[in-house]
Image (cartoon, rainbow over all chains, first blue to last red; front, side, top):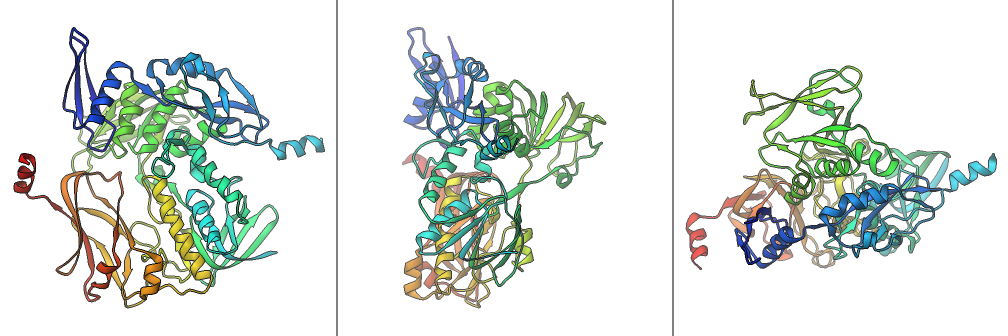
Length: 131
Length: 439
């Protein structure tokens, strides 16, 4: 029988919930304080998800990195696959906050979106012109 | 020398400065933000993790996204922004001396909002013995390197301090391919949010050593390892409990200090929290100078910074347009003190006998406090002599979370000036608790 201890993060009560799966697939829970906690523990047991936030390389901006995140939470066990994919990506400035960097990443139903607006670095441009 | 006049000068263009400037501008004032970095947004720009703005925007935004919302709002105003400009001095007459690439700038303001934020405590502040090799960084510096500038400070890490920045960096570094050996916390409980312990440490199997601290940094040119040890209740090392970790980097996430050097120069009195002493109008002892955000108190959530900063901006605009706000120096200002179980409480003083028209315009008094240590099943009570001013029950209180509440104008009118107002914790009687369970 599969069993998992989950600390609920829905509210500051931080309930310690034990989830057990019966042979018929039904979940048995102990320690949950509310319905929302029950849902959280069930998700954590069956299919834990996380919002991924990281950076991708950007060219032509005044900094070398563009911060990005997944538009919705993605399966926890696929985070490393997404990180590997994003490590190989480079975008070009300008880039607007909220615009899509990777659509439907790895077919997981989440887009990778920029979380900062980065314009073309005018200082770099002026330096080029002077040269 | 370049000279400039403005109704309201806002020092700092982070979340507090942005919100204060927008609000002061709404109050009909010309506003100037003076920011030393090359862009607006402050610390939010390096906090690329989600979780910002849940209260204000009902969305979990990344730090830079939250900042962008305010930068966009600012773009629709006529607020003047001076970037790359560092304030060096400020006088009680609200004359600001700053420096940038063009030279020295003098800004004459009618009112000033202090929104400089805070900086990290360093190794010097916590006195770790050993050599001074390369590889000891504050967590926020490492965060800037990794998230903005594109450098990794090391490959194997020990993190001292379980504050939110430290735990979030543990996850971030792991995702960037580094190995985090341990997070070490001198207190017997994690000092950041439980959510961050679960999602930043437990998710990656990173051990958290509670009641432990770093007792030695090894290595001469570069960190080669860290020794930690258990501490007793007096924070003294327990001999024989040492654990050695081979690593090349130590990150320190050991607290923040409000950045008030410039405030001090203007004769602004600082409280025990290292932030300026303010009354309910967020006005310091220098009339027309207001404080908000992390320069006043280290906040838990940026949403709370924005609320406080908007208030400071509105107050500054009122002052700049000729409305005199009651002074913290007045005999009508009654001390609000931190009693049993309370770490600190703000405002430092509450002005009583405020003109009714003014009071109704300003609204209720916002009080914010933090508890000293984690407690369950307590009342937060505020008393003035024998009179009850406020009472509320809390199931859980943690030092990592601010408690914010309002005191009504009616409660303030009844304040006895001869006695201080005291905020304190009172355990809920066991009898009431068991009765509640039956019910």
